[in-house]
Length: 104
Image (cartoon, rainbow, N blue to C red; front, top):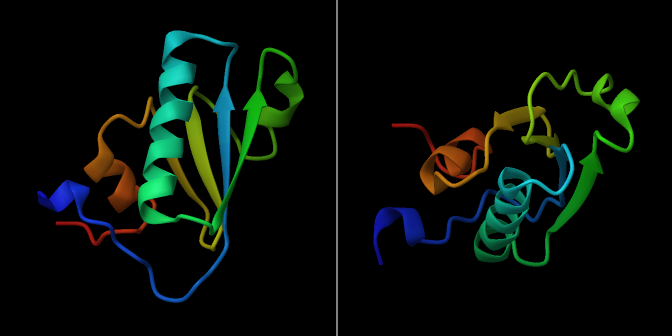
């Protein structure tokens, strides 16, 4: 198992609230959701909730989290809020961005 595949457990058993902003059922949106689910099952099993917001259906919802590009992942809890833009395919970058792994 290489470094990117090792499960990392953050301190405590905090519940994670993640919000994924997408624009329709595009290949990038689908990839982002699949990548996020896989990452959560590996690193946050049983401690996360994912809310998917389709900005094609509800564009006004982009204002709350100041979304400028899609797909964008917003970590609402635990605080502080973190944002990651893209299809979430770079696991190491996502883990660092979510503060599940220290930066290098």
